[in-house]
Image (cartoon, rainbow, N blue to C red):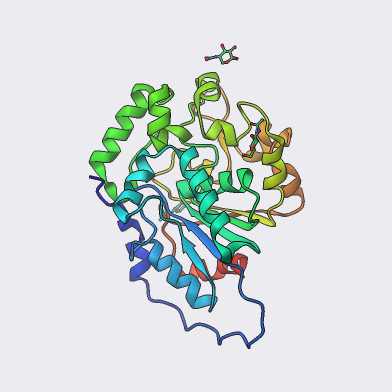
Length: 306
Ligand SMILES: *[C@@H]1O[C@H](CO)[C@@H](O)[C@H](O)[C@H]1NC(C)=O
Ligand SMILES: *[C@@H]1O[C@H](CO)[C@@H](O)[C@H](O)[C@H]1NC(C)=O
Ligand SMILES: *[C@@H]1O[C@H](CO)[C@@H](O)[C@H](O)[C@H]1NC(C)=O
């Protein structure tokens, strides 16, 4: 039923690849830190033109690395459908179980989430400290949610229209919250109290329903939290959410950066301490949602995976 919307990564596929991989590490060198990838909306773990390319790009630069691209469900089709319709809290606990059972991850792993996969992996870091996540890389993730759905990646228009209508009709009703992924990070700044009381996912991980001290402790265990923002993003509204900024509460015009939010000033998640210690990394890249070149990826992202 779900039509694929992963064409956005074609641009990456068509770029000429840069020069070859470095020579293999000499024998006895420690194995590279494994990498866990979580795909975005309408995508799947193993699509050769999206996450498949990313996996190859990483393997080329870090020979011998174990890359786990998460599949939510039993098939690629289910994986795509679940990115729209499976309760995010269920998805996060499923992923926690997958990671806990994987013998290759027990010494720790890096995590890289694309679009909504960025905030979902942050939830994994906050809720499931074992095995330990080392670096978290959020590529176009929406850490303060979205208020608008201008278009879906890859123009999957009928699903997108359906989701938009449902969100407008009642994103915070119980039935919609439990069944529509995008409603679970829908953040209405004008009705902030309704959002706080009824958002079953985003308001929880952002400490807005109540403060869970283990969320802060667990997030602060990260070495680095890298957030990539796409300067010409036409999918995420507002784009500043990719750097944890959002509309100032009560209106939908003025946007404030993370550093001016209560989450930061009251340091409810440890982000202020991490920022002061240079452990938050804000990267900006010119281009639309999830559009980057292999060269940009190699220069800016690969160093966090080594
Ligand atoms: C806080 O989060 C942890 C990890 O997800 C969970 O086990 C615990 O029940 C939460 N505490 C409260 C008070 O919700
Ligand atoms: C939100 O919950 C609080 C505390 O239970 C309550 O006082 C308030 O009326 C609720 N507001 C909305 C809009 O649901
Ligand atoms: C992308 O956005 C940046 C910052 O707003 C702007 O300077 C640049 O011209 C834009 N590039 C394109 C191709 O639209």
